Image (cartoon, rainbow, N blue to C red; front, top):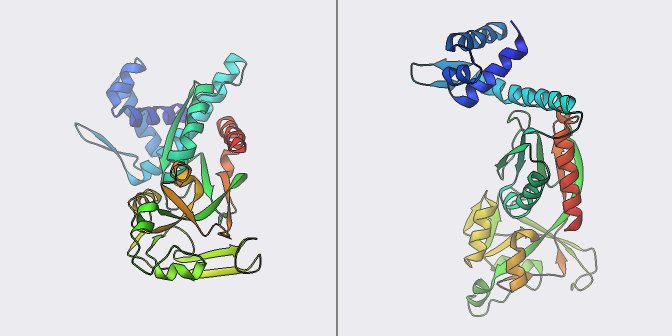
Length: 306
């Protein structure tokens, strides 16, 4: 058995959804395609596909194997193509992960310009606010905001972001008589705060006094806030702030336009939450990928312009 060819065939069968489609495109028989996949399964000692008369489905083992093999097959095709052309043109799929808000508001323009510069690349963008295992999910490169607990990843810091307290002007206008916008961190105890549960500190909000604060510069305060809404979604947190439901503890880029227009206001500007690193990370086995290197460089350059 030509194992590499069998792996390529398996990937194409999954992508095409049938043996007959792969047989047609490779000018062979459906039986020959099926035999290649069956031989691969025997070699691996695992069932990869569940076959019925009308459809194919990946088994649990097949899903894990497919995520890894598809990436390997794509890299081989990329290397062979560059060799034949005598150039380093990038081709094939690049699987990228990021948080929902950052992916939508900041990363998408970078992806657009990257695709315009590399016409042979296809991007599979996966947005999720929670933690995902890059190796298990077959991710080539991810943008992560915050410190990295996993030291096995290859990381490059491409920027820094800052959290700030934000509130919609409708929230501030609707405050009960006698309640004012926060002047010091402890004033947040009188307010409805929207808690983003993907933060390590959740509702323990930390602040450091700046030059204009009422306390000496560098003084740290941690306030345990409360509210009637918590969420693991940055988009829900954004929407609830815009709806005037409460005060958010948010990365500044999540409300760039609304802050510029005055629709959303920054609170406690003299009390700064900690700075947060923005890092591009990839599994160690992807460190030699030309596509990953090119994308990391692209994001680094774009972030430097921000």
